[in-house]
Length: 166
Image 1 (cartoon, rainbow, N blue to C red):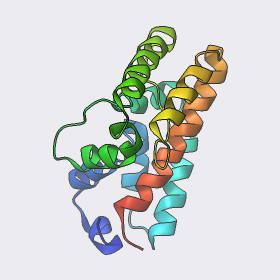
Image 2 (image 1 turned 60 degrees about the vertical axis):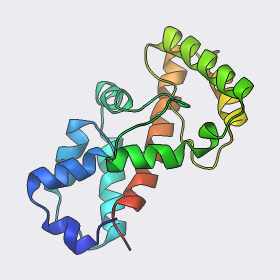
Image 3 (image 1 turned 30 degrees about the vertical axis):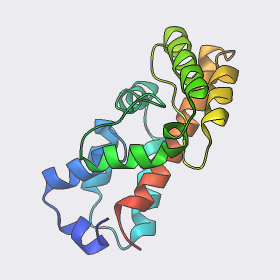
Image 4 (image 1 turned 45 degrees about the vertical axis):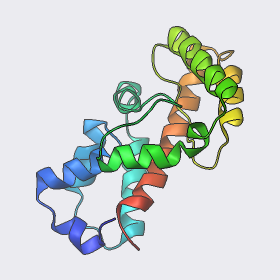
C-alpha cells in the first residue's frame, strides 16, 4: 500500500504499473494516471470509478481477460497476484468436491461466454461462488455482460482502497 503522496509522486510508468493491478484496461489506466495528483484516497477512488464507468464493453473485456479463473492457483509475487490470492481465499480453502465443481462451472462458463467467470470473490465462500457461476450460466450474453461489468466495478473499488492508504 502506498501513501497518497507516494502514489502522486510515481513516475508515469510506475503509476501505470501500480494501476494495472487495479484494472488492466489501458484506457482506465491512462485516465487515472493522467489525473494525478489526487488530493486524497477518496478523490482517487472517485476518479477511478468515474474512469471505469466510461469504459466500453471492449475495454471491460480487456480488464476481465487479465483476471485468473476462480479457484486457479495464482502464482507470482506481483501486487495483483497477492490481491487475487487474498480475494479468492474462499475458493482456495474449498474441499475437493467444491473445487471440482468450481472447475466444471468455470469451464462451462468459459465455453458459454468466452472468458473467465468473474466475481468479486472477497468474503464469499467457495460454495457461494460455484452457485453463482451456475446461476449465471443461464444468463443471456447481454445480461451476463452487465453482471460482469458490475462485478468488475466492485473489484476495482476494492482494489483502489488497497492501492493507497487513507
